[in-house]
Amino acid sequence: MTSLDPVTFEILRHRLVTIVNEGAISLRNVSGSPTVALSNDCNVALLNERGEAVVVGPTIVTHALACSYACNYVDEHCAENPGVNPGDMFFTNDPYVATPHQTCTVVVAPMFAGGQRLGWTGAGIHVA
Image 1 (tube, rainbow, N blue to C red):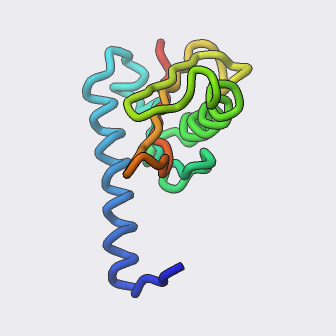
Image 2: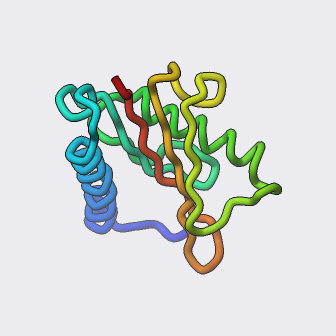
Image 3: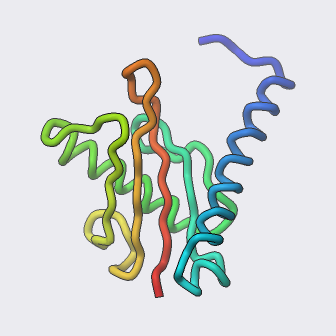
């Protein structure tokens, strides 16, 4: 593995943080839920290929954890049938799978480059 110099590391770290921060802002702006739009009851995350959070947005951390649980569920139950492919998105509000309760929803999507899955992106919200 190649090491990064401190300046490059900070540039990459800042870019990843900016991506999740802007994702959280976009999620709030398009949400029809007052709890999301007004109280930030949502979050976004970038996750590695194993579904472990790499960068988490600035709002409710529970929703980022739900993204991780959803990725693990998809890997365990959907990897072979129907498969996990570019362009797929997986949605759940099942508290036995990922969310804290049924009024929370999570959507996760795999990220691919060159035909190889590099990680996941996810968003979770509380719908009132």
